[in-house]
Image (cartoon, rainbow over all chains, first blue to last red; front, side, top):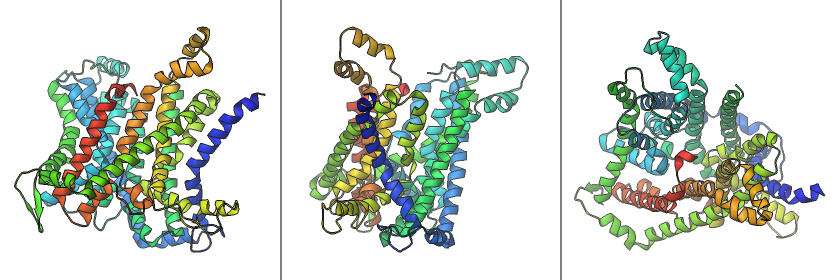
Length: 260
Length: 288
């Protein structure tokens, strides 16, 4: 009886989970395809296409570019976000609501428009298309996230702990290094890994403001011109795997904090 | 809300100093570029040069040429369909996760439900191409069931674009609606039952109105992200009809017409702002 009542819910959830996972499953399965076309019938498993991807120097250069941009832009985002959150949460500044809103504003605008603005501005003032330009753009979209995450963790409770440290004679830099940063470590890491994931997957900014230094999503995009290809499956599966690893890491960090 | 606790020196100067890097970055690489685009949109490209006379010619052009207006209409149609379908599909899933899955499994179920959310737009759209294109998985299934005789293609049309979008936004909306549902105190449902409401009435008059904020936040995010996305329609849509972002990118990549592209970006922003005003009463973002 109970099962019969639960059956529609199970069926519906199964259907939607199927819909959500179908394309990813197909992507990963046919990355192990034996022949040259990633459509049924499946005739693998074969690691040939992964070998082809990792032997491709263009692809590896794109991978390197993606890693560099993701790590550096995320580090900058976390540092700027932390400083801003600390400044805004611990100082009674005028216009603080307005400033808060302004720092969050990039989240409300399409990434396409952010990318275009950077392209047109860099073009007008003569900054060439480059990885640096991509990194700048990725900080623009990740800074609000890092700021919001860190600001939400700087409440009265944390302020009291900092005050206690000061009362006990800690200098300002000691409060920062020995109290605030260790206390906010999970939030700092969460902001960092979230930014890494977004930067790693980001396409439109990287597409618009680079010419030769493509990142991985841009390189995959240019592979699409050749149609369906198990190599694209292989590199796509790899990109997905890295993102998932980042998300799981993020979840472990947040989950660990919850238990404490 | 975080109350501003009395700081070390209470020095405003120190606070501003901490804020300065983030503010300068956002001004230089976000606000200023938007301003530059605003100015460009009032200029005009003639031949290969940009003429710096201010005027509304680009905007007039946009609404005078059916090619541009159609791209806007296509975008609005696709976005509205995607938003509505995604809400309808996501709500029951979020409800099942919150109400029918045992609490200790909810986290895992939710993480699984949004795992493919973390794929790059490019990879996700390509994956749907694998499913929908001629001879792909879907075609194979239909052949095996005897529904069709030969390989069929479902890619390269508006339906494929909508499927690609709905896939992404079902995950997003499941997240926002679930977050809203688990916040509701169980007492509300008991109270409704005590007052004589059946499960259906309790849902329509109690649960649904209380989850409206979750629906609306998710729907707004869906609208904004969907109407501004270039990749999904470009990969799955087949190019017979263009959506607004595709028309914008075309102005840049094919014609290098920055003024026209800027005007179109401003129009896109105006549409999003109008929608924001429409949604504003539900979008108290600090509540999420």
